[in-house]
Image (tube, rainbow, N blue to C red; front, side, top):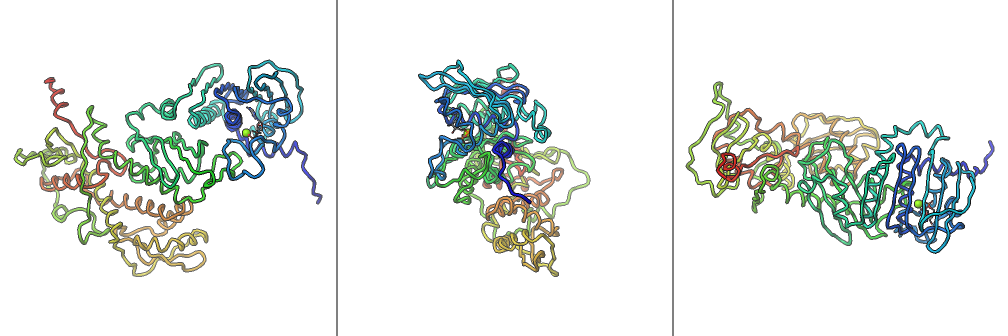
Length: 579
Ligand code: ADP
Ligand code: MG
């Protein structure tokens, strides 16, 4: 065996594999360089999704010919003083992007500092391709042609021009959101796609996100211990099938960080179905020494000094904003004039309530459906309605919807959705009150898992015990389950443990366990609740309405749909042409 130093050419190509995966990542590096150079305007032209051409032009500081030559060398950067790796304010700092891109494409670098002449250097797949004077306005223009054309191994992994274009557009959107003070244009195959003037952050975000967020968004603004979080997130009812519209920024750097994505998901737990995703643009500002950006060659992940605090701030901040908004959302979906009602008294669990007793009342549980039932029944209007925001039950329609009369309109409640929510909130309240009933297993169940998973569960055993799940380490790769939360009934313990271990591994920290159990709770709630198709007595219906009024988050079911809607008197009058 002989050990040899790799020639710089090969080193650059190896690095290119990390830094430039596809056109979008090269584009990102180039635009970041423009922003670091103080550009006020960045113009991007692409051909064939960037596969044929990526061109980025800026009006930033520009470079002298000597600086240009240096910039194309590996580990040459103007952005990092020797001892400042822990206080990085620029996008770039590694000095790898230009030489990496130049090693796998034909790169033309043209630059002109203010008050000087322009110069051009061409590098063709790492080899000098000539240089000379160039005519251009002050700033820098970089053209990248035929990216990966001569690197078949990489070329194979590229997708269609259309898919590569989508990734490029995404990269530009993220950077444009990160730096709303800079103007951007984007052209693809000769077509103008984006024209963005410098603006404040909310305006820029509104331009780039769904305009529907004006109506279906919630503004976020919170500060804690020098860390601030701002931005906009969608109401749970306004969601998407893919998580493609989640824009996260740490100190103005676009990131795709697992911790942040996990925190966002946790904030929506049980407000949104598991396969649906909120829209979000969130800006987190953290003191520079609290975050390490040098953990990933593409700089899209970060590491926080205190991840739990960051996660707590995000989950708490978003959750609070969503809770405040939740009572209003159902009404806002329906009515032109939003109906607002909030209840000041919060829900307190009934004495003796345990996880094992879903919130079906005694009288409800003893209620057997009749064989012959009318599809709708009505009560005469005798009770005063003004005391109750959700009104007084007047009847049931299709054995599924409760119709109630409120002082200012008609309320329709989806009984299953509403009840499911109440059950979940009760279980949660019981758990927070410490009254978790557990069911000891006669024979402890033996669950085989791999060793790291067992380690994780063992470390979390105390926390899980508090939630009614008693676990014990039994061997290197075996856990014993001694008790389960009573509400779980007969459970697939192995499946539950595997899910829990995966969740702990992914997110870490006790909060994720709570999230996990909330998900479990939501599933139980669904099984424990009043089905659609079940006839309810008027007292039962009123009891449901009263409980909804005092239960937090009861305006939405566990899947994010509204549990009730309102038809205001004004709207009824409009329907009859009286207005
Ligand atoms: P890094 O951004 O990590 O410093 P790069 O390889 O991306 O590394 O760029 C190397 C150097 O080239 C930068 O530090 C900067 O001095 C210079 N440079 C690159 N692009 C531009 C630009 N558009 N305008 C001015 N200078 C630039
Ligand atoms: Mg750079």
